[in-house]
Length: 334
Image 1 (tube, rainbow, N blue to C red):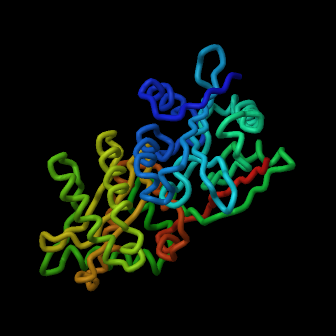
Image 2 (image 1 turned 90 degrees about the vertical axis):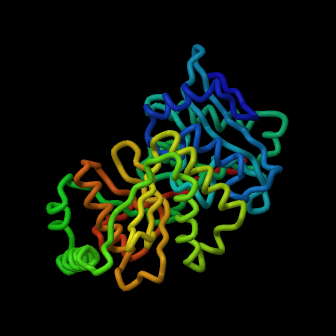
């Protein structure tokens, strides 16, 4: 296998990259060429300095792309590391890209290539790979390497959807089922009615993105997260997702005003819940619960297979019937 390092994104890679991703496990939206390009332009909303160095490491056999390690190098925990693009904060799931049959050869070849590579990569002291799903076939490859360390990072709960709203409700705790029904019914029957709104028109995207960020910023912790650089990063991610027909920006409107919103990806027949926000003026309507209930109803009726809450173990996720899984970190020192 021949390895090549690309120090800048090239449109020549885009189609073959995404085609390979479609055959890779896992196949997640955070590994699409367009997303990682947008992430790199803003360095994760300022999480990483401009001095970080891009290193897209591509493996070829017979002139055909068989693996991509979308990486960058930067100082992390007092040493220069090679890390996956998207690390750490705003990309829930990351990995290398390859077919399952090629993965072990690609990863072992990648490790040897990085170890022996002269130049900038020669200064790298470790591979430090965050946010790999616990069922990724990447992990057994590293588990076979005595020098690799693997640790659990975060919970990442999800809900398998039966494709029918009533069947979904019957499968969760009875008390929670009653609460969901009651809150959704109360919002619909209120004097000021509630309605679901999806962003589908290009000429409304910019205004709707701004409305969503305003909702997010009503939470003190999220307001601190939304620095000017992060706001621009979030907007660019949304634009890219909209252009790729992946974006699901959905709101609960009460009396014509945005009361709650979810920023999701609608991708591979599942909903990937990325972030949320709500207007505290409407708390009497339980807008977060009502919107999530409507989103789950919509996802079931539209035959989505899964709603993935991604990282975070907030209690409400389990109340809606989520089951646990985790994301992992792999560290390999040189």
